[in-house]
Image 1 (cartoon, helix red, strand yellow):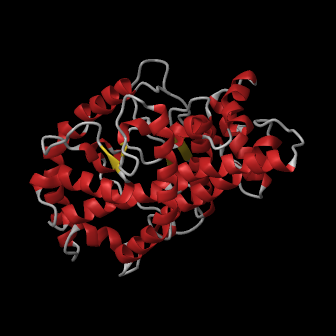
Image 2 (cartoon, one colour):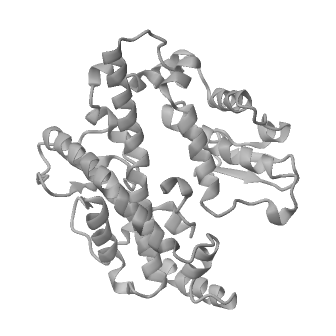
Length: 361
């Protein structure tokens, strides 16, 4: 991960030039089309259509309540990261009580902050997770080995093995023949009871390992409802599938499990060291599971207000950054205008996919 603030800013800006700025007009057209389609089904807008799937008339209100409950803990993490960054990035002005420049968080949208973990580890001398990728490489692991490890975990807790079709047709890494594919990780059910597949461009690293477990959690859910009539082969609500994936992921990424499969050193540690190891582990989890719900709230709060017409076409970017500052405490590295469409760098905006999940709650 780069610690060069100018390099981070360069790529942050470049990504936005090649994404949101290029399809802002298409996004505005899609709003009209989506709302028109929703009205055909008796809903006032696409927002009401999406919310209806959750069978909760107070869905948005309940999401806001959960966000409010999470904010105190999030603010503690934010303040801790900001203090670390003030020391790390001497060439960037970061006010002691101000927002964090978003490009320093080292991910496309800063929806999770795992990339900065090496720079903000509470107890660096007691960090174990930094060695996982090195151990994976020393073991000569390939993407397929990560899938086999995940399958073994699922079978060990009484769940199903993957099908022959899964192993034959899944895409586990980027094609080596030059073909261009959508590398966004996803799980697919072909509704014949045996053809389940994962599509992802897997790398041999800890993040990809987590993603494999998450996506295979989706497959498990699909396999377990495959015997039902077609109309019942779906999640209880759109967020439930993500919850299944993340519950499995959290169970599998504990230090004890990773030691059991040889990805962490199996040492007998003193209580003090164990305590510090656990604090490091909890910080790593917080950088994803405390940070991501706030970002998810911003995405859907913004989208809700756009589809309802509360946010006008000439204030899309202004309102986006207003919400990111208010709820997440981050700011862009340079001044942004309505020429830009920064939220458009998010896949779920470009693809029109909902971003809430039960795990965000």
